[in-house]
Image (cartoon, rainbow, N blue to C red):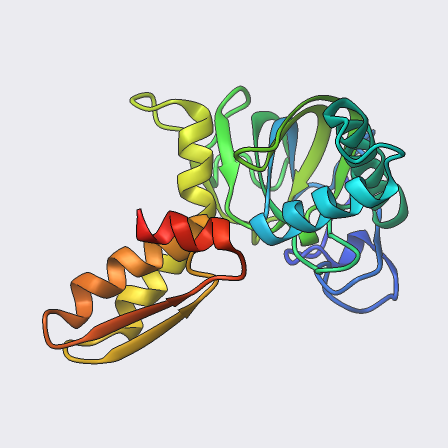
Length: 242
């Protein structure tokens, strides 16, 4: 008989008790048994938030004996990611507070959710909730793709009853779908906020979501509006110009 959990996942919060999983310092990431309103995911890829991955990469360079040795830096990234999960039961960057999302396969559906959701065991999904609130266990880090902020792992994760997801489409590569879904909310919000003729300033305009926001804002403000993009590095600035 599976235990019944809170739909927002507060039953997984270890410390401090009584708060939601996202601000919690530590979650229960024991995957041996799931609650009746949880979905167990066999994780394939973590799509780390851009700000978080940049911070982890920079931190790894500081920790490496030779910051120019890419293999050594990658090992330091692995150590930092594993430590994040060990300390918190989830992958929330301890300095930026940000997470990301994941791609995986549905391994098990809690009894209370069976027949009530459009998922079945074996479906490939991307979670549309942050890793900063998702119970996660990393068994092994297989590959780090620093150019796209993605990390392939062996591990498990829990999606709460209130969590949203998207089935991976068959007509595009999985990793592309994951990248697109990760930032889909930002341009959607831009479309909602921006109006014809406005002047719009976008902070962090050179990142993945920033570039999409720039594109959407330009369409919304039209020829009488103006879009100003601010970036924090020459590399990002050049990306915007291109």
